[in-house]
Image (tube, rainbow, N blue to C red):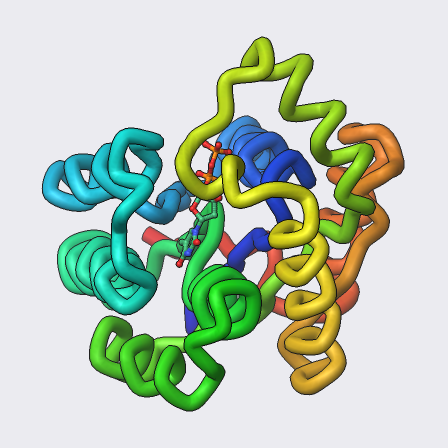
Length: 216
Ligand code: TYD
């Protein structure tokens, strides 16, 4: 059976990292061999690109250069980690993927979806997630959560402000509406525990092969 590729998406502070960790921890505790990744980053080269992308010192970064750097990190992750994992029948769970570029660079930065789709196609060679879980949260709650988490220190993308984050949120909701078969929107204002239960339940309901166990 085909191993699942599951992605978490959401605005900054919506809890993608927490939920990705939660799901991976639950699956590992139950004895499943899974691959956990994150974007930007997830490989040695990708982590260097991530540092550049998030460094507030690079506030002059051109929007297309930003798009290409996210895509370069994604390409390396797909080639080095995601494709080999799926080929060896391991499920992959990622903190962000292509929809981040569609929402942040395509809509919020205004580069347009056709250009971002083209660049994503180069980066992924057409590899799509089986399910993208959108953690939906209003920007003020997300901002408050980020402030508690990082003591008010913002990275380069977070510095783009709440109107930017609001555009990203709307873009995510639109992307989910466009592709309901491969999307799940959850209310991220709930507790992390409640959201993680909803994630698990939704996966069981949607995929007969979940949780996936490799037969040895
Ligand atoms: P993230 O790891 O969620 O940040 P944090 O560690 O602060 O939780 O994501 C890094 C930032 O990069 C986030 O603001 C979203 C942004 N991003 C894009 O703009 N485009 C992309 O393609 C990706 C993957 C992320």
